[in-house]
Length: 315
Image 1 (cartoon, helix red, strand yellow):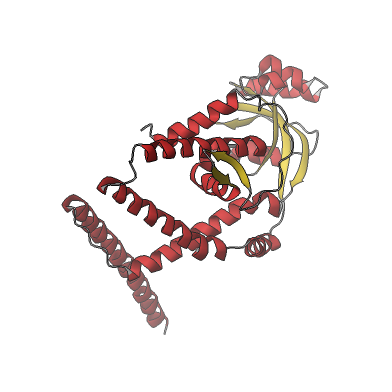
Image 2 (cartoon, rainbow, N blue to C red; image 1 turned 90 degrees about the horizontal axis):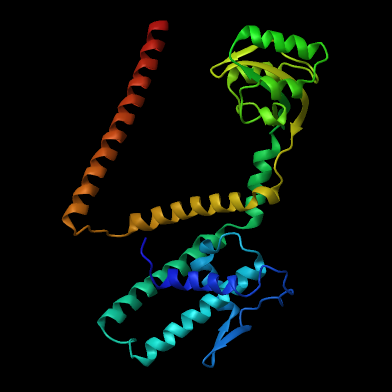
């Protein structure tokens, strides 16, 4: 992994946090404003608008830092960034073909981001996401979940013996700790917690969902061995609230919007591949896509002809 200037500045911001005591609670911040000055370097102001741009650039690198620490890390990033920029100005590094080419690249990137924000992100609102959520959950029914314990052994006879003891009043959790071969649940008395359909192997799942609360199953065979199952509880799994899935829905909708916008723009653009190797790869990819398209068209055509032939034979 290349350790470039951006990565250094991010690491430097984290280093400042590590020595600043910010693991402790901090005072609440004033409400941010686009023109609010948050720091100054050599007389130059760094604002909340700069913080927002820094967030867009390095936010993913900051992980799940608490908001106050995240804000501090962004400020430190901007400070280090300005210090390096001032040093570059002193060495007159802001001129020359290399710098001009870099500025052209950054300008294209800034234009890209501005277009993306206006024509993609701003076109997907929280209200649109809420409408999508409401449509999706309207006809859904909550899934059923069961909570179960189990004891896993190698032989059917052993499973029958344990099941008889449990039905005769034996402590199921104690029997699991004594006999179960499942290292993941053995020490917790065979407890598997709540699970819904599709999370366990079919044989185990069918047996567990077929039990009544407090009931103990007959020995059940799966690829792991023989199970004795006790149903502890069952409940309806609540559907996620909009707030719980809002970010995922918005991200998905923005991604789909971006795909559509990118497709339209690319269709209007004149793209020429000059590099010979890349051009060859693109041509081969286009041939494969065309072959797949033709195969699908032939398949549909054959199905239509087969259906027409079947109709003709019935007459």
